[in-house]
Length: 163
Image (cartoon, rainbow, N blue to C red; front, side):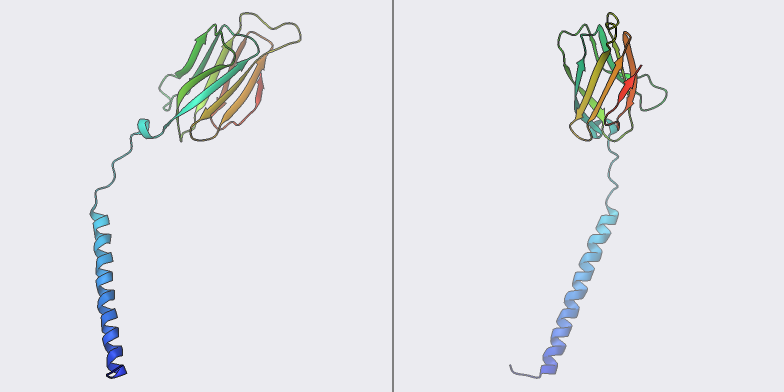
């Protein structure tokens, strides 16, 4: 190498200083662009927080009717009927419903049979909800009478209830 090592060092340091200043101004400029961008639009609750789910209900014997409702998001509304059927011919029953993905929801399941079960036996329903996103819900309820009217929460991962 020709020339003074001190001169080469000073030139190299100046080149690094210029490159550093240019890089810093580029980063500051891009940071300012991020600040001036418009705020993102609020997401539509109905479109983005809804997932599909499959319902499976297994009955001890064919019921007269069944209804699956969910509690309203606000306390002023009426419960929304998700599934309803009269005198189903198939057992188990399958259905597709739409669910709120990230909210606490209480479901109500009402099942009515034509007559009470035989002496010493019970009517039962096993309910399974498998959403495309989130935790599966599986509950079972039984009764010695003709009706099951039970409520359960979205986060309930299993349990049994007697009426």
